[in-house]
Image 1 (cartoon, one colour):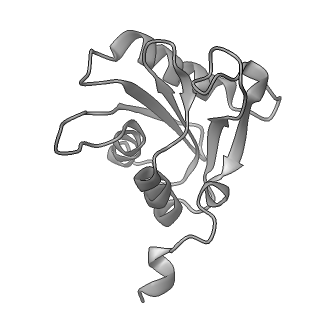
Image 2 (cartoon, helix red, strand yellow):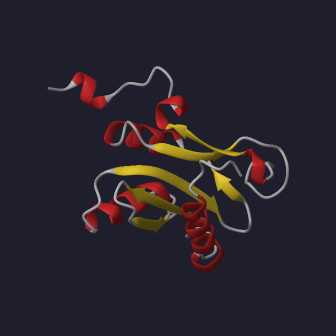
Length: 142
């Protein structure tokens, strides 16, 4: 992994994915870091009607703990799928509420990071990079 990655945040999400995911109901774990260093976590809640993604549950948990200045987020899949990118809805929510947040993603092709990338294939990118030419809710509402 590159030195600028938040290794602790990745480890927290990976541990949560390894120990708390449960069958088809909870398949993703996420961790977010607040600017003051606090970490909040969350699991997705899968349901056929749609359910909250792990990233959004972690954002809510952070808010419940009084953390509103989130700087970094990472999601890890159950069953050793490794670091996974956020879905489109999560990208939009993260962009709207935390336009400066960094998202840790996998960009490689070897085993262990969710897209087949080895540990060196992880990197942190601004959420804006994951959502080019984005519609920003705040840009269009007073």
